[in-house]
Image (cartoon, rainbow, N blue to C red; front, side, top):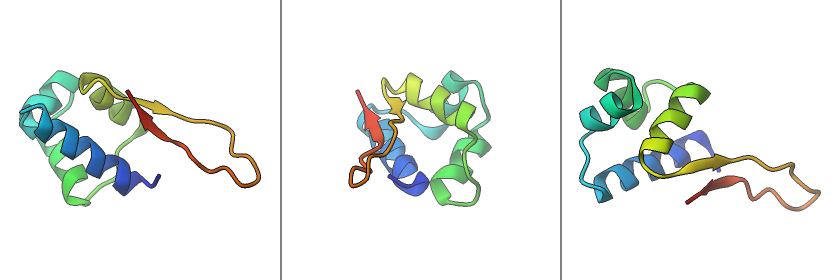
Length: 77
């Protein structure tokens, strides 16, 4: 899963939960501008900030060692 796919999923989940980008940002301890720039693809999220907003949404980032043919890293509930 690419960083853009993670942000797209984050945005989808935010909207599904009825949160504005501003509400998500405040709950995650960052500015609206930060979240807005991620969603528009203007900047990349830092790992710490990404984990914080995913936590607010009830998501977690799961990282596994890739096997020879298994590259299925991603997000789960």
